[in-house]
Length: 87
Image (cartoon, rainbow, N blue to C red):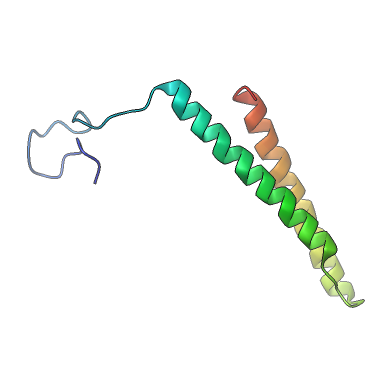
């Protein structure tokens, strides 16, 4: 439990305790970094899916392309969020 949350004990001031918050610029930088890491992981996953062998199975090939497409969509969404947050 976060410090400052009302757990039935103490002051009863919900959310107004001694919990320290990082300055917004540091918080945003951390969020951007997490998003960039997620985008990199999506890109790597797409690459591994592309390299995967389907042994001529049409069903596996279709699933592979669906997963690659979803990965690309996720990567684009993450890129859009990163751009909106300022890079």
